Length: 392
Length: 210
Image 1: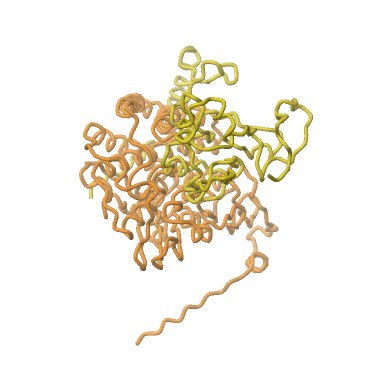
Image 2: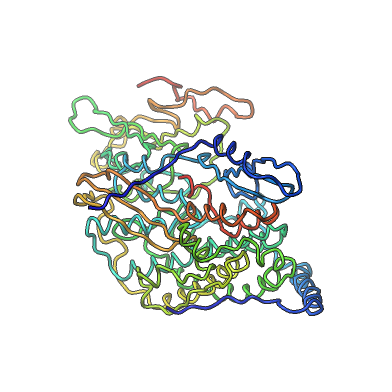
């Protein structure tokens, strides 16, 4: 019999700040001081508060403080039926809402043993990849803006609008989709869907060259990103990072390859991997991922199988047998997992979301100390945090 | 697993870096300059100037509304399925039993835009396809209380029952008019500066429980 003793020390923010203030002396004999970055700060992408211990311009330590956009999603989920769970996940990582919907639907389908056909799987995969491109385009625009370049923001939003139009046509929403339901999809694809997606792909391909000319090749951008915020592979795994953040550190981990879901095993695509793990690698990994996503869509768009878009009645009651269920998928920011504990009734007795941004954010405490405040902004942006997903 | 290693350009000595830097800045400027001299590439929409030509997609979910048949009657039987499916209690179906009848019929259909998340579940589960999301996205008002709507223009039975009554005058006796802010959870607001009177129809009895 092995007993594991778990020791946890819960300390308040005041205690941590006081403990930090007593540590160490600055080598120059200068005074260290504390500054709040956020919760209302344009480059923290939402209400994220960072308590910084600074020595001049240099960041010595950093504490992320959460709770400013806590909505009690997991508790709220216990009061809702299985079909109504889905729309809550739109409000977690709002840039990956279709992928979040898919994970919840997949875990409910797994629990209640709902069969779905190939058409549903193919359309889900296409929408997930469209959303990945859309999400990365928004990130690219905002990333430029955080580094002080306003132009990429407009370019990113202009091209994101092409994909948003496709979503608007088929789903009817631009941000909070609630498209993927347990047992299928809310609507079948729009008659113009295939044509529009093909037009979007042929429009997007030359645009990547423009992005490289405008931002990636720019010497100022390169100098600001290279060797800034280096996250080694070991710490990335230890901190639970996932998605582009993990892959930029050189760990080839992508659930689409390791444990394929949807129709990912039928398509041919590659996983971009970084070598150093700095901001530049995280940037380049996402830029390459967009191209790979378009490749996936291209392979699937011509061969959407025939079939129903919903395999069960939209009002039918779902009662999964009692048990514990877990499902995870690769969203644009990393692994999003849903843990579901069912007691056999119409409502789950416990729901837990494993969100990618929460784990990616804590990489900040590892990589930001030692850098400058200006670098901190590019590091936060390169981690691509979405705050409602951290706090839920 | 098929992987690609991302490129790390721009390594070299100081001189080559210098010339690379100058070239990269000029390349970036060329992109913006190209858009400057090509005004046809501008994608900005001039809202609200383009209001008349603005066409949104058919499936856009902006406001919940009722669908009516050619006589102006709806098919709602007040079955409460939409109310049960609504995740955040944005729908209240108020039914009534007319004198001498055992079947209940729709009185008011309260929809709260202020708490609605536009998840579309009510539209999906409606057995008679009465509910529909329309694309009327300009829903801002001066008072939050004005966001509690009654969607049905009349209280009365579904169109299938009404059409059995042949006489048009008899039909009118079965139904009572309802305004957009009628109902037990209705508006108890007051006229505000900037809102003309017609926002409050005269038939509306503000705050009066039925």
